[in-house]
Amino acid sequence: MCVPGCEQVVHRALSRRGFLHGTGAAVFAASASSLAQAQAPASFRAVVDLTHTMSPDFPTFFGVPGIEMQKQFDIKKDGFNLYWWRLIEHAGTHLDAPIHFSENGATADRLDAANLVVPLAVIDVADKAARDSDYLLSAQDVADWEAKNGRLPDGCCVAMHSGWAQHVANAAKYAGKDTAGTFHFPGVAPAVAEWLMRERRVAGLAVDTLSLDHGPSKDFKTHTLWLPSGRWGLENVANLDRVPAAGARLVVGLAKVKDATGGPARLIALV
Ligand SMILES: [Zn+2]
Image (cartoon, rainbow, N blue to C red; front, side, top):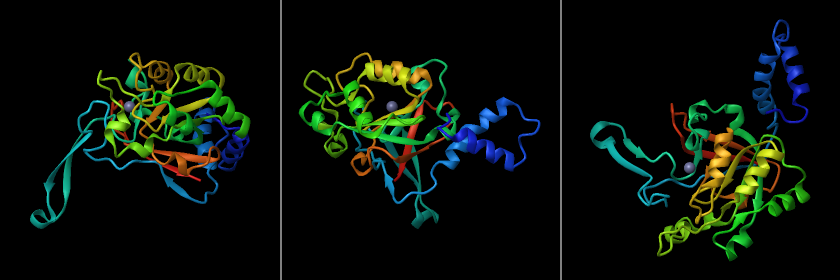
């Protein structure tokens, strides 16, 4: 995706490097997104870690440890330390790749790196979520964000800040499972996902809860709309209260594993 003004920047960059001669539009287009992203973060004042620390105790959707670590080598005995990990792809702070809810969508290794460094738009619904554990990010929330901050920037990640990250040490509250086995935590309304796909150019959706869909969802409608469209999702995002509503840039440091449907990610915001 090309942010406003990037065609000119790319054109200048390519001209300088003398690459324009004999190259077709396809090459130009392919280079454009990477160059645009490379140009964009000209400067930043602070780095904010949007990643929770992963451990076997981290709450998971499946209720089993998202990671198991076995110490295979120990420095006292072997001269170095090394664990073998057994991981659930979708546990802790992680990315959902399009293939997670589609037959032929992109796997984690096939996501374009330029699409993993994006403007970050944070929509704060913490007050509403505090009153309603099943809160759904609404069209009105998006409209309110745009009224204050302007149109969602092309190629951005839209993040729901529900305040749920503060509950992460309390697995019962974080997952909110009731006696009938139904989860209770906030998520993104399917209608909002649909609207963002149709009306804006958004690269990814992020939530500070276990799932893009809110806890009670049985059909995972937001997942089934969003991921097959080629967009990605981020779940269990931390520290969204430490970044501005607009203006930060998100770097998704995703493990690059062949055929993966997602995976652990170190999320870094440049503010
Ligand atoms: Zn996931």
